[in-house]
Image (cartoon, rainbow, N blue to C red):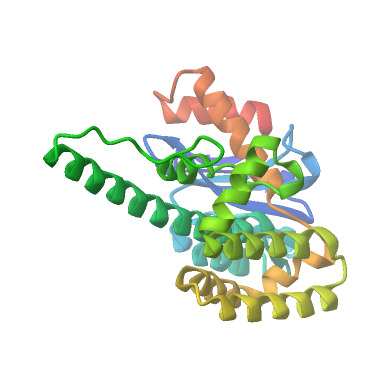
Length: 291
């Protein structure tokens, strides 16, 4: 039977399993809830183990610990992001569970670092174009931007390259291939950063052995250090702090995809009702479907 208290917390001890995911989701007006789900249920009935208002570790721990200790001891693995609060919650509530940092959160950091380099160049290109417009006006001339071989201006090239940098080169369209070639010729630092993101993706995609993955990560570390990118070094430090739980991925290749999928279902459910007017009623409907 569920144990609950208004819309502050609801727990379903009977839904606990050996492999869990923990994540946060915004239900209404940016208010965050911590959600624990059972992977075995695959986002269907019996998936919801706990939903608790807020993300403060001590409060979440207090409520999850209402589940019998023996049941919590039976959890073998839990996937999570790199938030310290999630790590602490997992450690205190599921002491025998191996923590696995979700690979997509790690890859997202490198992609954000890559996009930051692109955006910096875009702002510089916009500033340069604005200066040329001002200069042309002062000379009573009309500024005509210089176009590249694919028809983009420099500013457009940097704006339109956003999505291709998220993809592997094998998945580029012909236009994206042409745009990438021009981009990489003009901005070799973007090319280097793009290659670093793809190399990390390859480590995740093509390695099942923990020791081999460890060696390849060490080589990747060296390349990041040699690149001299400040934002990539920040990513490197973050990965270093979560190194063991990142490597744990290569044991069973477990991800937080089930939690992300569950969150997507909650958001879809929320949009179906055009928002959340009454949290307690919304949670009631949610638990009817997923608990």
